[in-house]
Length: 108
Length: 120
Image (cartoon, rainbow over all chains, first blue to last red; front, side):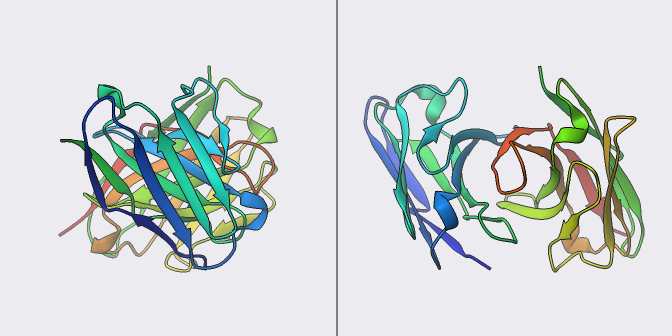
């Protein structure tokens, strides 16, 4: 099973700042089969990024993903108030599908 | 518009059973794999089970294999999760999710989730 470790656990930033979230895999993720999801309280997760760097439909271009192998990054270039949420990475290249433990992005 | 609507949750005693349903619309149901993902209160996301578009292939997390059964009725556009021998630690919100394409793909749509509480 591929274990995904996200860091930091909590990130405190102000609107307008740049956020960098990390996801490290215990072994290489096949074909960059890595996704990022955003979850707000009381809501279902929403797909942001798939294939490590492709934005899902309707996702603003301030969200970008990068990385390959075992190290992946989600960057939010200029934080908007609605971006404060919990973010999860997920690998879907090998079974079982696994998620990271999440990074909480909170307003400073 | 893709919609996934879970139902069937509620309170069940440890050792009991429950069947969740997920009614889908807005896409060609039989063409897509579907999954169940759960989230314990205040915790992260955990994959539970997958089923292929035809229903012929199913996959389970080790923690539920032998107790949970995933199935689908493509004539009713509905996904199911039969959960037996439930444990207190399986209290969670259960989400159904649509796989974007094929099998090794991301979840592009999620239901709103349904709460299952396992308690005496």
